[in-house]
Amino acid sequence: MSERVKEYSDKMAKTIDHLQNEYATVRAGRANPHVLDKLRVDYYGTPTPIQQVGNVSVPDPRTIQIAPWEKSILKDIEKAIQASDIGINPSNDGSVIRLVFPELTEERRKELAKEIKKKGEDAKVAVRNIRRDGNDAFKKLTKAEDLSEDEVKDLEDELQKLTDKYIKEIDSMVDAKSKEIMTV
Image (cartoon, rainbow, N blue to C red; front, side, top):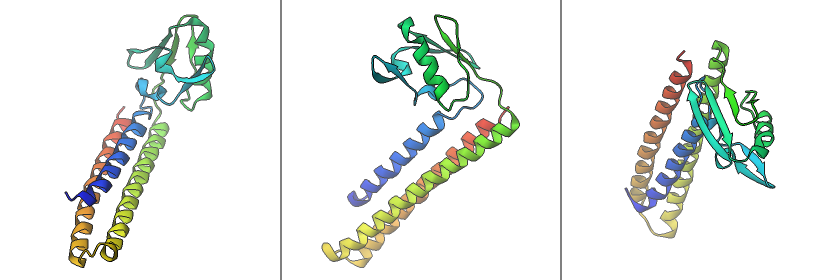
C-alpha cells in the first residue's frame, strides 16, 4: 500500500472501530455491560463512567449488577441509569443496583435491526466520504507534485479497492449483528 493511501486506510479503519463500539452498546436481550459505557455518574462533581465507581458484573444472562465502592453514590448511579436511553428501571436494594433485561419483543427486535442497518449505512457513507477526500487530494497532486495521470489513476484504484474491502466488512458486521438481534 502506498504511503498516500495509508492515511485514508487508517481513517477507514477508525470508522470500522467506531461502528463496533456503536454495536457493542446496542441491547440485544442479553445483559451486556457495554450498554453502560456511555453513562456517566456525578462523582464528587465530576462525570465519571459507572465502571470506575463500582464493580459491574453479569450474574446471569439477563441481569447486570452494579456494586458501588461507596454506598453514598447508589442514588446517583440510579439517577444516571433512569436518565439514560437504556430503557430499564434499576432496582436498588441498599447495597447493589440490579438491571433486569426483559426478553425483547418481535417488534423491538425489528426496530433494533433497522437501527443497526442505519448505523451501518452511516459508516458506509463515512468510508465513501473518506474515499472522495482521497480522490480529491490525489487530483490536486497532479498539479502540485507533477504526478502523471497514470500514477493518480493507480492511487485512485488502490483507494477504491480499499473502500470496497471496508464496505464489505461493514456489510458483514451489519448482517452478524442483525442475526444476533433477531435470534430469540
